[in-house]
Length: 452
Image 1: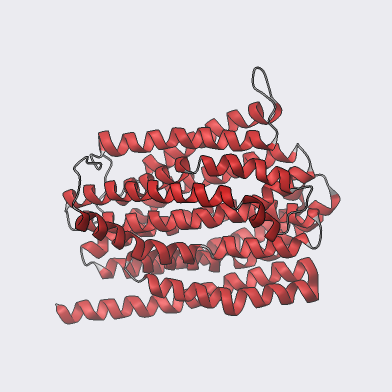
Image 2: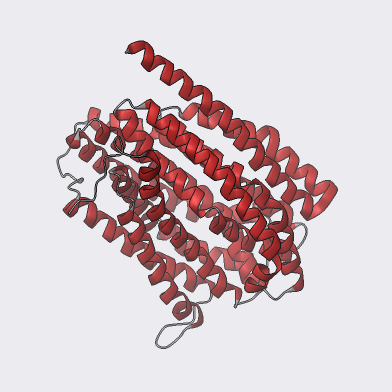
């Protein structure tokens, strides 16, 4: 039975809550996915842990583009739901999945051809590079299993059903958690593959989620059709998705791009700093999970209400979400600040890694609430068909604020200066996003009042 939800009616807080809570469970499962990998790889040694940390920014760049595709698909499909045009929603879902397969193929070719030069550029040493290469080679080959279910889950979420995608994501975590120790350490009949075993565990678990996602879309939601569209219809759909997806993917690159630059700068301060940043980034993802879930939930909420021309509901929903983001960010900062050493010791007993992890957790969480606002606004602007506005915010944030501060911070205050630069970037991005979003919504509301 379909679990679609009409987001153009009923309580706004309740609608957002019903979307966000299941999505948060899904986000937490993604965090758990990364933490499980980090936990088991950390037992292999500091070098392997550092190698896994080097892969994080590259994987996040790819995920940013994939997220852009998901946001584009969600925007189109949710608007069709808001207009009650189910046939169009089916066509858009099918064409979105076809586009994801083509993009996955491009990533496989480009990724495998650029593994070594990419990570040399990021600062991977000769000792770390072989571990990075063996992990990413498997990961790139299996990238289809990452992209297709992500876009598929976005389509399910556009219907107002956040629970099913979250359950699919949780299933991936369980499978990965079972396979990780078996393939990394070679338990029972399984071979000992080390870091490569973590990559194989990821590939197998993601493949299973792809099967589940496609099954739900085809049999339950009836959102996949085998009717071959005309080129004009296919081109129109892909163009509409990419109009939102490409700028959105660019804007979503703020975190992985920062991560890549930070990793490069930290590599000059030693493996311990890189390893600590890898641990800190995963803890950050955990702390931000509810805000990430909320920002994802804004897509279907805004999309359906946009299709139904209910800008009053969109305005109230964003205001409520931004207020919650600031409150949650403050709570996370206080918790991580006072528990920083205990948390760091869970992932490493190395004195230097613990020291640098504590430093990260004492500084960067100050900006979490503002980072949340940036993500919420980003999702809202893209769904409102304003991807250029969203991209402009990120370009200003990256080019004029982040990059200069990172290099200045590294030069004058070392590791601490780098973490301070990240924090200032989050805060400034949140403030700029809030101002731009307020003006866009005011203009749209004014336009609708003039029409009526």
